[in-house]
Every structure is written in structure tokens, then in C-alpha cells.
Image 1 (cartoon, rainbow, N blue to C red):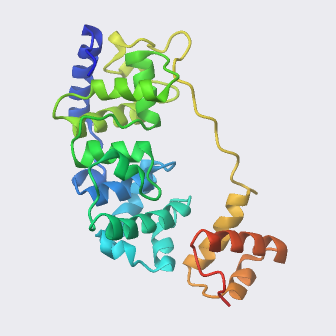
Image 2 (cartoon, rainbow, N blue to C red):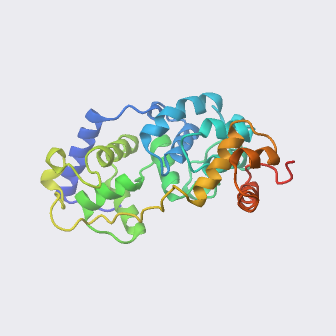
Image 3 (tube, one colour):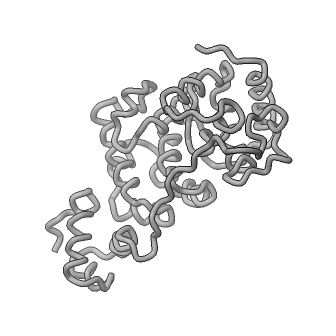
Amino acid sequence: MGVLDDRQRCLQTQLLAWGNQHRRELPWRETRDPFLVLVAEVMLTQTQASRVAIIYPSFVQRFPTIAVLAEAPIQELLALWSGLGYNRRAIRLRECASNLLSQHHGLVPDDYQALCSLPGVGPYIANAILAQAFNHHVGALDTNARRVLSRAFFGATEQTRELQRRADDLVPAGQAWAWAQAIFDLGAMICRPKPACAVCPLEAGCLFQGRGEDPYTMPRRQSTFEGSHRQLRGRVIAAFAQGVTTRRELALRTGLSDSVFDQVYNELAEEGFFEPDRA
């Protein structure tokens, strides 16, 4: 474990205190259940917290346990997922629940490698579960956390492994959950792409302070949704989630040309959205 310098230790104390006072009220923060934390983190991937906050409560009310989600009718699953986008995440989450039943005795493991072996779970989600459900001494590096750490604590760090090691060192002993919320909230509310440095609790000790070259490198923006292949997939999935049950009806409802529909439909069938031989 690395040793923090005085500046970093001061920033750590200030951020934790600020987080405890200004923590956002979000429905998934009311639980430490590893499964419900997993559901929230999958939903939050590439989706704003405000949108997830609307859908998460009804979703976990309908699918409150691993066993229930593993048996979820795909059509109903997608209907409840509607509004979050990136529908493949819902399918992978269902696969993840099945895997937990068959390989992990119906429990979410508290081991990094075991978590990363689950469908749809990568390094960030694994660490987010370890920190928030099990209070392990690890940093959860989402986009917001990376931005805060790069600007305030460390400066530019190109290697993810090195940033992860430093992020782990920053976690206050026994306070992994509270620390994760504080750093998420600062990145979402103040240390945004265009930061509000004047009201930031870390301004005095921040390496960046809104001046000079920003040490945080923005990830490449995704291509435009309008007119994209993702939009075509979304049209087929939306019709399916609304109760259309046959391939022929889906083609009519979406209004896509035969060649485009066949391409999209076969692709979705291969990904597990529905049976490829559906009439």
C-alpha cells in the first residue's frame, strides 16, 4: 500500500467530509445487497444516474433476487429496461444471474477475478461491487472518479493499472462505500467536464484548479445515435418489448426493409434476445 503525501491526505479528508454532507439520494444507495449493487452498476454503465433512478426501483421490485432474474421472461425484462438503452446489458445481466446460480451457489462472489468472470462484468463493475457491497479497500474507477483523481490528486496517469493502484491507496480505511459515493458525486456535481472549481471543496489543494492543461483526457465520444445501427436495433427491441411475439409481426411493426430487418433480427437472436426460429 502506498503512502499519501500531506496534500493528498488533506484532500482525502476534505472530499470525504464534503461527500458525507452533500451525498445524493439515489435508490441503490439504500442497500448493500451485492446483487442489487450489481444491478445498479450494470444499469449505470453509459447511462445517467437520473434515468437509472427512475427505472431501478420498479426493476428490482419485479426481479428482487438472483433466482427471479435468472428466470425472467426476456420480453418482460426488456419492457422494464426500456428507457435505459444499450439493451444487451439486460440480456447479459440475466445471463449473469444464471451463472451465479450455476457456478456460485446463487451468491455474488466477493473476489475480483470471480466477479470479472461473470457475463457483463468488467474491472470497474467488479471493483464497484467490492467497494460498495463488501467495503473492500478498492477504488471504483468510473469516468467521474477518473476525472477527479486525475485533476485533483495525481495529474495525468496514462496507465489504468497505475491509476487503479493509486486509487486503491486513497480509499480511507473502513470507508470504501462512503468514499466511492463522495468521489462519484464530486465528479457528477462539481468536477464535471467543465468544472465548477470556485465551489469545489478541493480547490485549494487541487493540482488542476481549472487552469492550464487538463490532465484528464476525455474518452472518445460515441457515434451519433440518430440513423445508426443501434437505432435500428432499438426499434426491433422496442417492438418486441411492447408485446409483439412473432418475427413477421416484428418486421411489419418496425417498417424496415426485408434485408435490414433480417440482418438486425438475426444479430439480436444470436445475442439471446429471442429464439432465431421464431415464426
